[in-house]
Length: 115
Image (cartoon, rainbow, N blue to C red; front, side, top):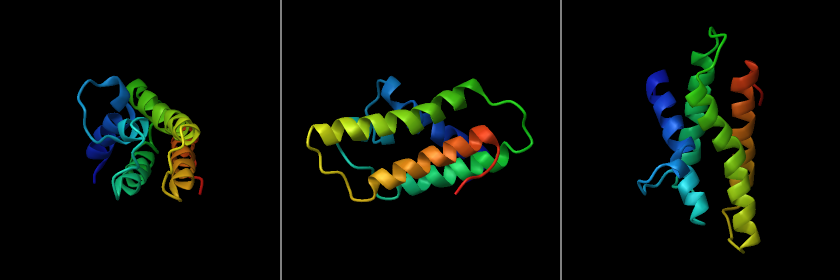
């Protein structure tokens, strides 16, 4: 995965709830009470790392990217919590995966990778 494909992937995954097409995007699956597709979180984390590295020499962030990253970090947690309240039995490591996504997004915003 290169920077351009990682960028497009994160935009698609992060803004999925605003799209009319029904696909297996990360936030759409969470909203439907479905777990992520196997490997989906890993792909998101990889894309976040690639975007982080690609932005190291950049002083400003693209608004479209920032919006998608914010939605991935914040809305995924909200959808997880709402699903839990509805009695959805999420995969055991999903909560930790969502925290890893939020940390990676925070890393992009701060310019310092946090583990």
